[in-house]
Image (tube, rainbow, N blue to C red; front, top):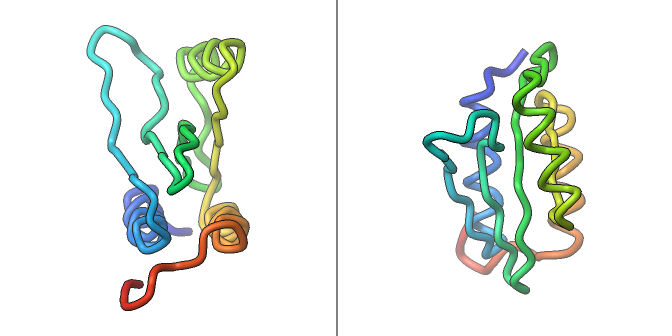
Length: 102
């Protein structure tokens, strides 16, 4: 089982190589906001919550994700390295890695 931190690091490295922006997100006073903001090269914004294979969303996280989706935002919940690998493969099909970067 890969730790959440290791998944987050790998995803950041690979997404940046595709030209994405990958921001750590903290929101003082608003518990449960997703871990990351992802901005794609074509300007699409989404939120990403990372969990280990056995990690669970807290009630505060579930509420925040529901609220963001209700407001038309895309929120991905990625659980473990298999989900991360699948998500990165899907992203690679849309945003080819930039030359000379990995």
